[in-house]
Image: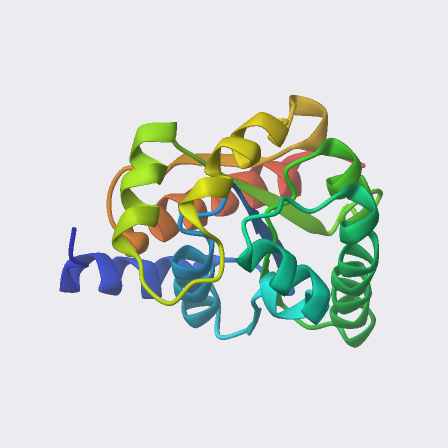
Length: 195
């Protein structure tokens, strides 16, 4: 579904309304649209974008390219790198949007944990829709054969993680608009809540 000019204008306006600095971790299974949505959000917020997959050690990429699921031990150094990137943004007072599958609660605890200034964004979608999207994309190291293991591993975030959850129906800009709207609503609500 192509992005419309109206959606882009709306996203730009929403981006101006978001209080900054803000750090978003966009999570979901492979093929859920993390990169597309995160790039749109980073553009609208005029902030840094980091593709979490680029922080994987080469051995992890090679393993996934062969269709072999990663173990928790494989993910450990990768999650440490992601947490370090987030902590650097926080220390510098920068806004940023980072993608990470973050399929398990333990992974999210490692990269977000008690960082109350980091917001989790969960891109939620059906197996069938994600499979269609994965089949349509080209030049990605994650084969469709690993989709079953992604959904088997997925532990959707619970209310205690305070996620912004959006359905992945629609185009990337429309999904990014929904994230931005929910983020603004949360910021406005939180600003009215006494400490």
